[in-house]
Length: 116
Image (tube, rainbow, N blue to C red):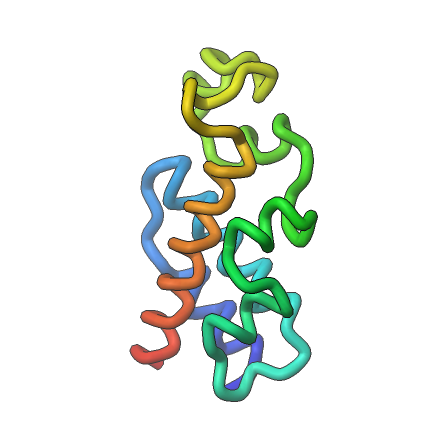
């Protein structure tokens, strides 16, 4: 299975919400970053990190709050959070939100590969 086939299958995934579109884009970026698309596993997608939190906080994905907010929020959510200046909630940071998106992107990739 090659990279283009997997990316094409991910692109055809019906994502309606800003969150779903962001997760899909993270999934495409994760696949695009792989050299070898044979036997894709969570560990291979983590690229040396132990967890998605470590991946996110380690700078392997987006690092600026505004970029993360723009990737995962609808325009109204983005406005309400002042473009990422304000944290998403009292108990989480934008990097935490990105961590959840990366976890879901990994699941989307693994489900997509099973379907191909």
